[in-house]
Length: 154
Image 1 (tube, helix red, strand yellow):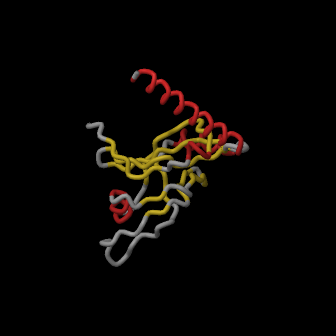
Image 2 (cartoon, one colour):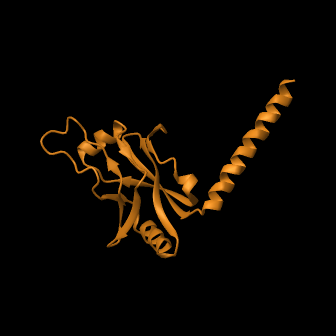
Image 3 (cartoon, one colour):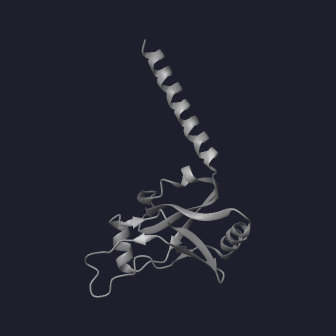
């Protein structure tokens, strides 16, 4: 099996808004027009999260845009989509989400071979001062790297 991975959609705000604790990869149960829309890059992961009910995990709030050639019955763009995880993974994530302040959010949708996979992350929300500290640290790192580059070019 080849290791070609193509990113179809990415949630860029995850690392800015949350502290990422751990990540997993899950399969997605999609209809045909949803697969076509995902391959065309018409997926928005920003407002999505993973919910647990009846021993199953669902992707909620993600928008799969309309596919023009879907025919007479297009898909619902914001329906719940079942995630394909092992039972043990679902129970472990559901128990951690039951703790205060933790949630599971999608970080990226990738195409691995012919399979569409969803990268999900167990996260804890950042406070405003944490976000400012992250931005400050990033700015300092960038300035130090620039100074080093200028010093080496002399």
